[in-house]
Image (cartoon, rainbow, N blue to C red; front, side, top):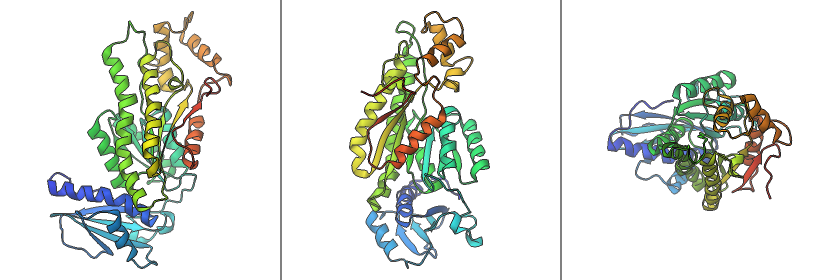
Length: 387
């Protein structure tokens, strides 16, 4: 259920902060699902739990939750702000088990099952290509997926396709500029308000600008850095907030940050230094974040795909890497785009480009593996091998 008020005034923003803090806690402690609605009244409503917006903590939530009758499969929480209030409906059972005419709006049926059932995931750069494929696979495996992309129309088309295939709670879209801090903050907040928390961040958004030292413009170099490197920092910074809140109230709860890196993060790339440098930096961030966040149960890993030769990054007829590399003379003797493609296929021992399903298998392994963090996992068909 969407908010019915805008958070503009200071008082409303205080309530918003309280709601964003308490939602991951409620979802974690109950093991269930949440639904929020806002009211312009701060008068207490009939609710099983009442909390003040200025007294939200793991201890206050645990205490209130512990006083509920254990047989209650559904309950409501009222959060009192200054002039505003929020009612949070919680179900301790899954969407599929919670179907009930009285709760049809809050907890409609969701019968999906899978390896990430019930998990909440953000996939950035998910309007097309790798990102869309990753989002589709996570939704198919039972996750609630946020399609985040600068291309808002494309993100909504992808989300609509996933809802059509997997049900109306499989996905929703957010227009997000991952290199802009306020946009990233809003992306995470909308996710928490919509689904109640965050379990998985797939930092997939990325761009390429190829060229030699003599050709590369400073603005292009900085654009690649902002999207491929700085944005990873921003997305991780805000994603960990609901992840830590859930962990605070449930000490055994785990979450995942997964960077979609590249084989170019494992070895230099001729006349593609801006991209390779950003990806080398991304592995440095992955290892550093992993060390910092381990105590909170947040695993941080990277997947390093080989060349996605069939995707738009490579095959776009105007801006794709085949065209860029042909123009830059990166492949000696190449006369056509097909010559460039054959050259890159010949470099892979398994003889083909990387596919979305190859990357998804690595992502699911990372999520399911509870004893690994700080790793950069190659998915390159043998083109790059770890020492």
